[in-house]
Image (cartoon, rainbow, N blue to C red; front, side, top):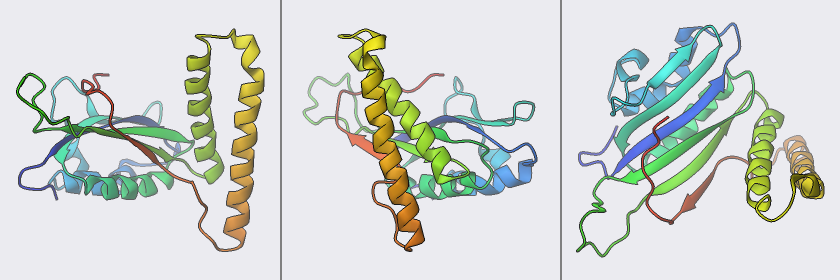
Length: 207
C-alpha cells in the first residue's frame, strides 16, 4: 500500500508482448502487485492512470500486447512492487520487453525560485521476458540504440560496426556467465534492472 503522503508520482511505461493463449485472468494475476499497491480490488479498477491524458493499463487482445502508460502515487517501496510484477510478467510474456519506471518528486515545485533543494526524481529500467536470453536480447538492442545514437553525432553509421560487435561480445560473455552460474546454482551478477539518479528534472511521459 502507498504511504499516507506519497513522496512520488510514479510512471510506468512500456509494451509487453504476451503469449497468444494468455487470458485476462492471467494478466490480472501477474499485475496483482501493481493494482494492490494502488489500493484497488482488481486490475480493471486500477487500470486508469492518475492522469486523464495517459491511457493507463490496457490489453490489446488482437495484438496480444499489454500496454502500460500509468501513473500512481507512491514511495520507494514501489521498487519491490515492480520487481514482483516483472516476475509475474515473465510467466506470460512471449518476448523480451523493457519497462521504464520514473519517480517524480511530488513535493518539488520547480516554479518556486526560493527552493534550494533539487528534485528527488529518479529513473529505472526493468526488463521482462520468457527466458534470460530474451531479456538480454532487449537489453542489448536498447544499448546498441543508445550508443549508436550518441556516436552518430561524430561518425557515420557504417563506421560503427566494430562498436556493435564489441557490445555483442560483452552480452555473449554475460550470457555464458549466466548459463554457468545457473548450472552451478549461483545467482548471476549484473543481471536485471538498472537505475539512474540525478540529472535535470524531466516532464512526465505523455505517450
